[in-house]
Length: 158
Image (tube, one colour):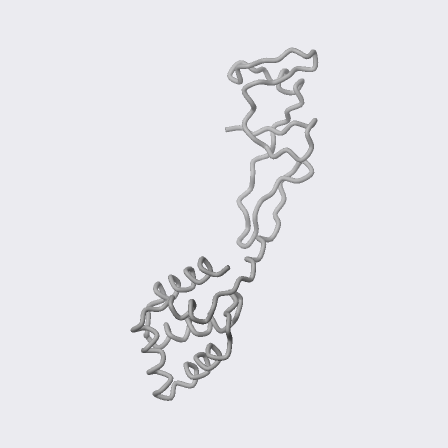
């Protein structure tokens, strides 16, 4: 479906032609299926170029009469209490982590020590990614389960 923007209203994002257009004479037309190209142009509407697919990590925006790409905004840094973070794991998962640390796994010892030192965990803290990657690498949980915990962390943090 063709998308148009109205030159009379800068900043307007392209959209389907509206049901009603106002011609330069002041008259209005109300059936888009019958609008002629001349009437559409007279009402100030211009056919917009097709919106491109965004590059990875970017979004497409309409600016100054053309499509542009801008980086996706970074997710806000949010925090979750240590207690709530631990609750994202099942008791079995958490106890397996502790047992692994007790068995001498230095990565788990470090992660659990760091977790014990903080009152709140921020969503961008490298401890989260490191700990989840490690538990997957030593087969304490699947990548899918680690992703579920990470997603729940982002959703629960305030």
